[in-house]
Amino acid sequence: MIATPFTPTTSLLGGALIGLSAVLLMWATGRIAGVSGIAARLFPPYEDRQFAGRLAFVAGLIAAPLLVRLVTGSLPAQTIAAATPVLIVAGLLTGFGAVWGSGCTSGHGVCGLSRLSVRSLVATITFMAAGVVTVFVMRHWS
Amino acid sequence: MAILVQMAILVQFAIGLIFGIGLIVSGMSNPAKVLNFLDVGGIPAGTWDASLAFVMAGAIAVTFIGFSRVLKLARPFFAERFYVPTRTDIDPRIIVGPAIFGVGWGLAGFCPGPALTALGFGSVSAFIFVAAMCAGMVLARFIANLPSSARVITPADPLES
Image 1 (cartoon, rainbow over the protein chains, first blue to last red):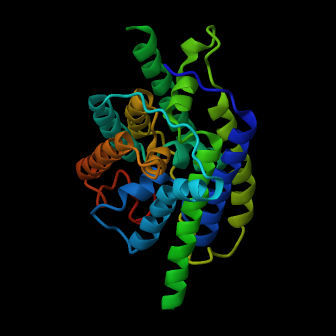
Image 2: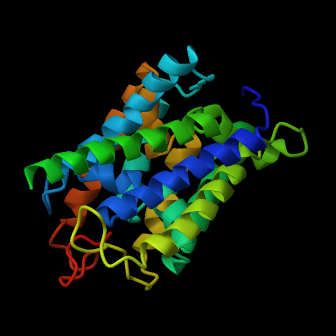
């Protein structure tokens, strides 16, 4: 494993930006800033006419590092340790589970908890626990 | 009217940009930080990284205050009404889904937001993850038979998640 420094200040600040984004999306479109819900609805079946807006949001997510690099001249470290087969399994599970459970870290963890939703609290506790158990098994049982 | 639609799309790009910048500034675009948070076994060794808790705290603080104000408005700027989930029941899916999601999250350290932002880093690994993630999403919606599945969507509110 790669050690990472504890960054309370920038993490709090970055978190606040994520919150600002969620508030702005609610203000603009009246919808929850749940990345899995937005991304999943880029694929058929289409339930509404919000495709272009969702695509624009996802494009913004992808463009963010390009803007950061343009402005600051560099990007922070990004270490993806998982091998390709693990990435494929992890991606399938993450995508499937997020849709099956009606949300992910942003939809349930940020927006749902902010709305004091009991469903989102149950979801957040469950995926946190599942994540902790998975990392424990991966790192300390092998 | 067409200009308003184009403005809405541009605004959503900017909002996604802010979200992505937030992920980068917070350090969450780095899966290693996420995994080091989930690694409670690293607490005695001193390698535990509590940063993710601060990201959540910052995000929830702003969203909690912001939502309470925005939802007092008559309507959103670009839409006729707010689409806020109203379900309160605890069904099997609200536990099974996040449990599956959590395992995937713990395997690679990616959840959907950071994975998409990681694409902009030019990472091949992120591309592989995102491709698999999209396949998983499509599969889940196919199995749930959305949008007609009455278990997920109430007929009165077809856009609710």
